[in-house]
Length: 191
Ligand code: AP5
Ligand code: MG
Image 1 (cartoon, rainbow, N blue to C red):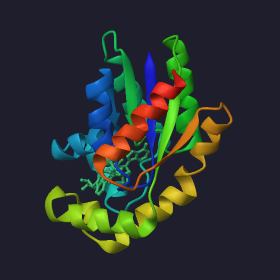
Image 2: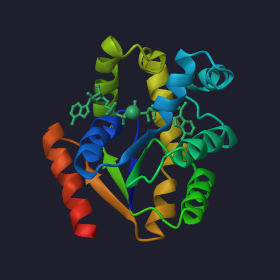
Image 3: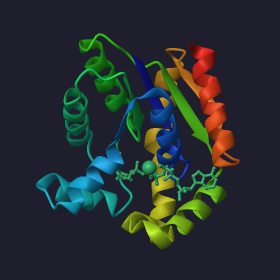
Image 4: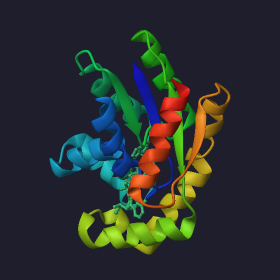
């Protein structure tokens, strides 16, 4: 199995590039942000809980997030592999993912980290706010908070994978096509 963690700050291009990777490699795309937004839209209990964190740009608690992700993984019948987008975002989430995959006799192949500087992230998210309908895109303060939460709580997850020699940094600036090529090259190089 090919199991990729697509990593990076808010607006780095995780969702955009995931689409390219699933197309090429036939992977299952699991975005915890998309899963939460599905629950929000359908006003489930989980959606109501998640909304209270997402609207402020905070992380949803680990236990809730891990349980949701586990069910989504276990639901898949004979997957070729996964792209994890927006998960794991904390070291406990990374540990839980390792445990889950080892039960399925597999493991994370690579973490690909899209690197984009802060001003560019803010520009992209402010632009996307015009069409995304995401309340966490609509307010510059919430965007700034999401980026701060990334640095404080999520960036350390790089070290978790670097310690297993699985972290590869990818320049996330440029055209969408050129970044896709960099991601493909990193995956081919590793195989
Ligand atoms: P989530 O949905 O994961 O959002 P995020 O990490 O803030 O990232 P985005 O989805 O905004 O950006 P992206 O990297 O996917 O970029 P995209 O491709 O869209 O999480 C939302 C919330 O859910 C969190 O804040 C948290 O509350 C909760 N949550 C989710 N997962 C959680 C977890 N594991 N634990 C706890 N809580 C969790 O691109 C952005 C924009 O840029 C688009 O408009 C795109 O068209 C454009 N763009 C893309 N590439 C380029 C390029 N090369 N050049 C110019 N523009 C580009
Ligand atoms: Mg996304």
